[in-house]
Image 1 (spheres, rainbow, N blue to C red):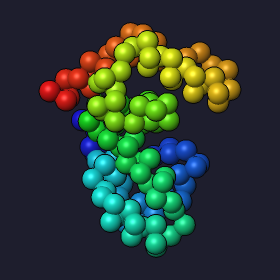
Image 2: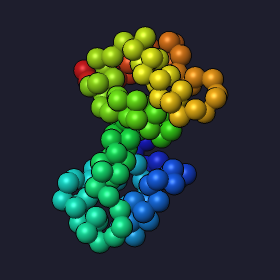
Image 3: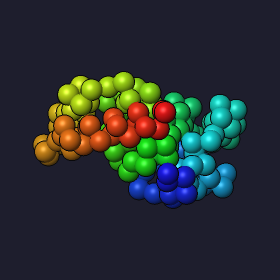
Length: 132
């Protein structure tokens, strides 16, 4: 598990949330994962950040910490509609490749798909082991 992995290289869309987290002494994915709704509400009141983005970061942090995924892989899953370990565990490799590929095509990155069937199967098996 990557509970102590530092928060760095967050996308620009999370700049206000990143600043707020640093100001509150939250410097790792594990600390973000442990934020509760009252912590998020307090930080939203204190700064320019949004509860929606904090909840997205918390979802990414959960995938990073519980499945030992890289933050960019966790973000890809979450933005593809696979936001929890349970959702990943109940997915199929084909569905996962389809969903992540659809997101990448809609972003128009033009790069080769990151998730193939083998990687999807590995992630799904890891999620299933974590749930058991």
